[in-house]
Image 1 (tube, rainbow, N blue to C red):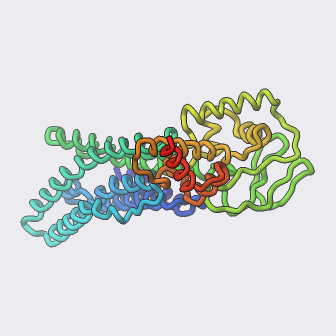
Image 2 (image 1 turned 180 degrees about the horizontal axis):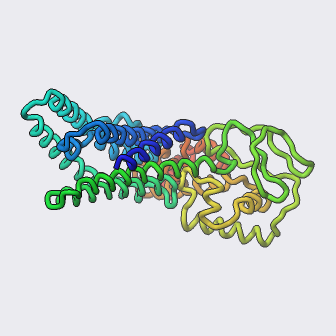
Image 3 (image 1 turned 120 degrees about the vertical axis):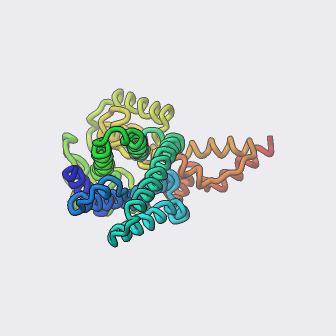
Length: 401
């Protein structure tokens, strides 16, 4: 078991380092960092206990309190992904079980350290209360997080997949813990097996977080900030990061791009270059793009990028870029944001007809924007109205009818 724990500690440390060193770290990622750090601390405490403690009662019954942190942190991460403006500290009360568990844990450690005659009784009650509190909370709230992510996050969003998978793993931990607790009284060695499986699942959780962030690291040029990127070579084979203004006479690269948010960084444009795709090929790709946007609503993914869209619809990302830049004369994010603006416009119309309360900012985030300034700028460019002006216009038209 110690080998499993040691691997888990290493994986948690690796995940925390990758998250901390990421150039593309978002505010919500701080909650993921907290989650993997808690997993690392949990496993470190267990490694210490299994290495230096010989008391069999402590080895079998000493639960750690850090497990009470996992579900609250994942829940806060989910809320932060759904609403980027959400303040995590407003839900501080979610950590009350963690605080109570910490008090109980250290009180039990103190009683055991002074070899009190009632030490094992205290250990028994601490273990029983913490176990029968933690397992139901894991099962109930993991299920709630899965439901929330499925219903509130855009279809095929990477964050949605991450949250559902992590919550499912925590749900498995809760269910397995319950099953093992029920049968542990009849099968002596089941306690060792159950702990090994649960620690292995914690390792899987950290590996899944690492894989998620690795996918972010390799996002395409349109997601990069701070540096200028060389577009492609003549054969579209590779991308190379550099800081030059031009390459050959056939390709011109912009020196810099004004950055307001990740969504506002336009993909680099191909200029003065002979198209590789024919007009009919680009037309077919455009039809596929439009069908995907209209039917699957990929634009509602606030982290949608050229790479993601390419994988979702099964079309080479360079072909998508060429089609947008040369067939419809629109950069990637302009193409995507037009669908987002159209979504907001339709929502404003339908809500005004129903006389429902309208929050323009909530609609902006729901449509896929992750920045108020980006939403306002694109809305003005596409409609020639500000969002408020457009809403007033819609209301006026409804009253006239």
